[in-house]
Image (tube, rainbow, N blue to C red; front, top):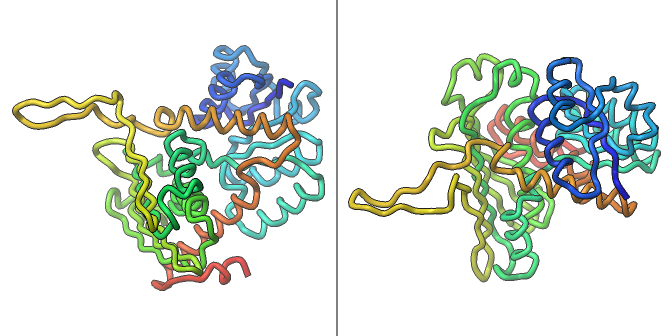
Length: 334
């Protein structure tokens, strides 16, 4: 079976997903929708797809699934719209910035028996998948601590920050999902600290650029997440899982896997510069997993529930910063 896609949004992430579709057997990009004609035409020229409006894609018999890459405040409405039409939906995180709206949306998905996958691409990175496989195989024993480092080379534009929901809901949300995935238990308490260290304008926009989060499960397992909007040395992406029998870690990716030694010391090539290059394989694996779920009629590997739980952790982190205390997840979820 070939799953025929419509991509909603031809911005940066839409372009990434279009490239992933083109790389996956059993996937075909049929149409792109974007209000900016130049962006849509660039995708059309590159992939040979049609340019259609969202409503035209809704009515298209030759589109089986959509990838939602539009602004966050449109996600829930579009998920519901396409779920009611019987089309499979892949949506970039988050489903919405409101947990209440997310719950209502997921209820519609359930009532329609629709297929929904939320885009947490890092679970599909080959190195991170190998870490998870080692953990699941018991190679490090019982998981005790998870450490996640995620630092961007630079901050996004201020207009994006103003509508993103803040660093916890935009950036750390990926790490919340990875933490849940690797801990193997739901988080009970969240303690977060946040500062503005890289650009005062980020603080003026009501956000932070430097955060640390401590997650704790009921059994005492912990995860530490550190994020920054600035890493002068490149896109810093590392995870480590400490268990009762040992440790497994995934290190950074460089432009080349070499090391040069000389009289002045050891030197490596620069890190890959951002998510478009660092996670190329992850995006392809993610779409491949979605295609498999749609073709086989099975549950997607990252679900609406995963999206809801990651957002709840983000909300708890915001509350923790505001009130300078540990926040129980039950305070957020009710």
